[in-house]
Image 1 (cartoon, rainbow, N blue to C red):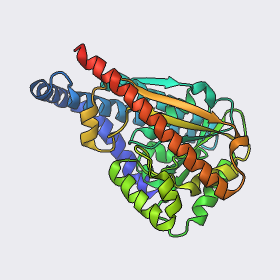
Image 2: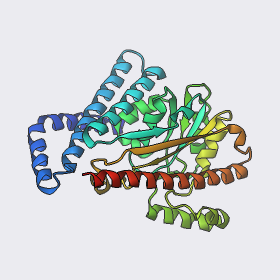
Image 3: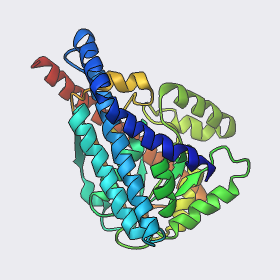
Image 4: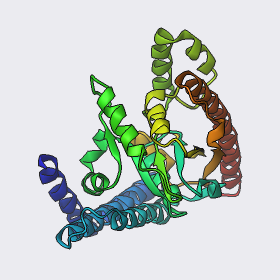
Length: 332
């Protein structure tokens, strides 16, 4: 509650500030971009998205308050519809302001549920990306997210009314966290249900990958040697994924590759990527549950194999997207 006393007013003040100061920040950033980068207009686009995001979040927060006063705070269906609207609104905003486009492939494998979705984790936008693509076919996602995201009041309020678990990554005792993940996954039973967890645990980049591989080598040299071929992904942390598999024993697995969000884990990286010159490519593969081993040791080996295959698919998508970008630049 103490967190929300700060975060909720800050969000509304931010949205109001964007609106009131629009006659100042818009011409200033337009002039700045015309001088420094007229072809890209990156700062103007980013601030325009910030304006869009702040009002989208404020509207979502207001609707969540309306659910509370009308006695629907404990009903999940209105909140799932709000989540779907929010995710679609963010993608529309990114398309309008930053020229981001998505090229999804094989999204039909997401249905029917129950499914467990294992996406790669490359950027700050991955949670948004996964929320968009799993809600488009009408799935009701159960998320494992890091607790730090509770700083966003919309995620804090709406996310805690939905069957999600906000993971304490710094917990000394991991058992309560894994038990909570397992319990969350037990609700993934119906044809419109899915669980989403990021097996890497954090955004992948060369520095993080090197540190993760070094830690893995200290604990399990055999796994480290096997996963040393990874070029784009961090080695998976299997504990959370195993807990989800235990909680949803009948769910198939969908592994999601994407290319186009690399480097978007810093403010500078985001500015550099605006506007998009080629679509973000998404590709999904569904694996029948019958192909997943029953024992933990076999599951870890299976997950490592899937992650190596995912790394190769990401490499292919990156090469395809690079060719698209080169073609666009050629005709400019």
